[in-house]
Picture 1: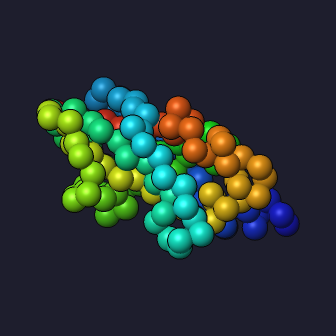
Picture 2: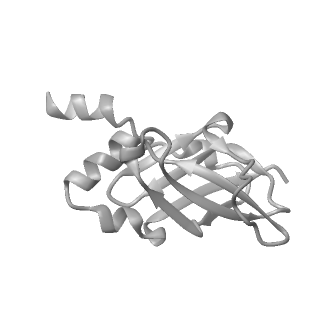
Length: 127
């Protein structure tokens, strides 16, 4: 009963077969923001990707202790007005579900959540 409830509250993506076409890339975020008490979309990583890599959606976000999540294009923010990007790079903002972040914090994993090395973006490119 508890496992089925957790699957509904935290639907993870265990099948990464949608990433099998082409070369697969992995990146960690340059910054992680964890402020779930501010509401939705306030737990996220900022990933700086080389501009020559045009993302092919869907992508996969993996956070240690939280699981893996499939993200479609409409789930990723690409226009980041207040964030400075290095020349030759594009920044994207990928959110983790607030309820998942709150569960991790209640389990005492706030430090794990705040560490950018525990976040990983897996994607393929259009080229």
